[in-house]
Image 1 (cartoon, rainbow, N blue to C red):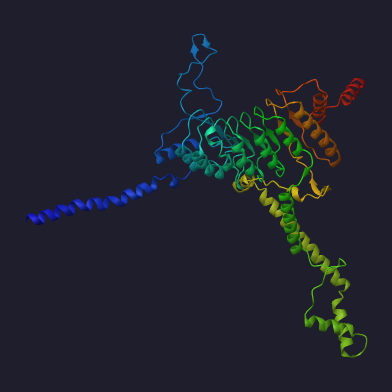
Image 2 (image 1 turned 30 degrees about the vertical axis):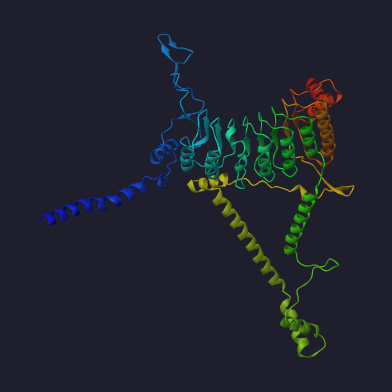
Length: 497
């Protein structure tokens, strides 16, 4: 009897464990962050993801809104605000709400506290499609956190990315410049980037097609880093604005930048790459175009045997016999009558009208109001903008000097900031010659070239002729510059009226 009681007790102990195991698995699957369906409210979604990921929640507040409120006394509100001194020091997420959907956001800002991988993972789960600006200022980013940031950037069309004062990941910023990169404004200020860090970054920047504005202010970039950057600008035609202020650039680095702005002599590697690109483009065009004879005429394909027989029958008409009569009948059949012509014209008109109706219907459908039309417009707006990247190696405007191929320089760069460096009078001379050359070339070719150049707080003699001429040249190249003669004519015209 005792043995039977022990067996029954063992069975009672085992059965509750078996019944409880599937329930724990089901609740675990339901509570995972991947299984959560977003509601469109960023704050609510983020708090729920924090809860499911076992991450401490972080308060969310709107950017630009003052913490607390004005104190009200007996005589009315006063001009100062009293706030708990620890409130502004606690970690918080500053968000900028979207213009169309107030529950969603278009900007996310984190300042002055360390960001870890779990937090960025939570962001990647609930990132909205309307996010265009992301700022992580002094957040202690490293390679791990930068790699955790990549899924977030792939889900949201971020255009402005600010990663200032994160020196731990100075050697890993090249990871951001992927083929799917949508960033157009990249700020890397105060990261202590050196010449060694610039090598990988510049190699990725060479073929980048999205970044328009790049800020490398307050780093440790010397002449070697600028020479590496100038090599990438030989092929990059997307970058428009470059900020290199407050670095260690001297006349040697300034010479490298000036050479890029003028004509470029191709190296042996670039000549080989050009030949390869030209051969590939010719092979692609030869597949699309029909074959031609040496005289330039298009070759006709050889006809089949049945077709050649009909041609011989037509050739024999008029000589008598059945073949000639058959040929005459065939000609009568092939020649359309006036009525047939009218009918065919009417048919063409009908087809044209059908085409027009089809186009108008498609336009009306695309412009139709309602949720379907709005969804179509939103999807069209969310499509990434494709920038045509023309490789300068295959440009047609080439020249040859001393057996070397010379191509036009980088005329896409419109704004360069070289303030607070160590540029002397020699570097000033290089810049003046480059811009004088570019001014003459751009007037003939109709391109813009460099429009703004700032070189304040350098080791320059401001009384030299090159400095005065350079400032005068850049003043005339400024798009907002108005000629004094035009101003006088306008003033005289207004006075006469």
